[in-house]
Amino acid sequence: MAAQRPQDLVFTLFGEYLLSRSGPIWVGSLIALLRPFGLSEGAVRTVLSRMTRKGWLASRRSGRNSFYRLTPRGRRLLEEGKARIFNVTWDTPWDGSWFLLAYSIPESRRQLRDRLREQLAWLGFGSMGNGLWISPHDVADHVRRAAHRLGLQRHLECFQGQRVTEMGAGEMVAKCWNLPALNKKYRAFVERWGPRLDECRVGLAEGTMSDKACFALRFRLIHEFRRFLLEDPFLPRTLLPAGWAGDNATDVFHALHDVLVGPADAYVDSVLEAAPARQPAGAT
Image 1 (cartoon, rainbow, N blue to C red):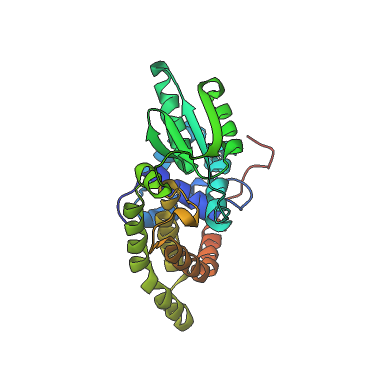
Image 2 (image 1 turned 90 degrees about the horizontal axis):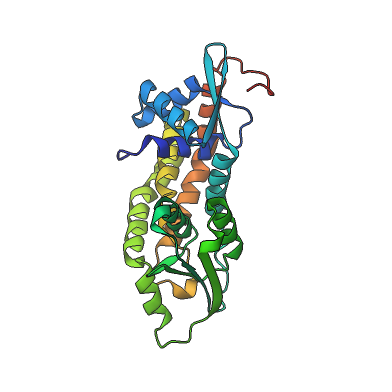
């Protein structure tokens, strides 16, 4: 796996393996689970501290031991990502209407403007330039929540309607999203991960593939696949180009994930069981 930001690796670990587990996680367990991906003990402790300061994680101590859990903010982010992977809601008929968003944010609030752009990309918006963004989905509720979190309600204007210009839908899509580049990445994902499916089935059947190997492979699988959530606008099928590889990539991901999930979870269980006793549930 190519070098990744330590924070991204921690998010993958919590989102894929620890999201549904109750209680905080011992730092020693986190160190052990992240070691296969190139993070030293010092690097893990540093990134956990940084993520705590940023409000993604909360920490507690029990004697000389530290424990970490997701904050509501961190949990919300990972639950939204998990829902987009495993509970597909975008694949519905399109009525041809567009949701438009325009913003005017002063330069003094540039950081908030950048955060808004990240949120819009996450929601699948495409930029038409000059602060105008469009989406073929009805994302009004999501936009309201994002604007409220950022305190930008007074800086946004939203509209919904039909296109009346001569520009075709395909031209508009090409202007706002680079689907050929994304399709190339989906094809590369299928070529890289497709052959692993039979390999894993055989290895598990013959007992030559360990639970730890399944854990590491599933981690790398989800870590790579979840990057598509930041790049794919999940457009209606009528707006997708011919030969779209997103479906094949999704099928490969789910099939391989299903094969790995049991033994990978068993390995995580074994690591967590080695942790010392935690504080009482109400302690901070």
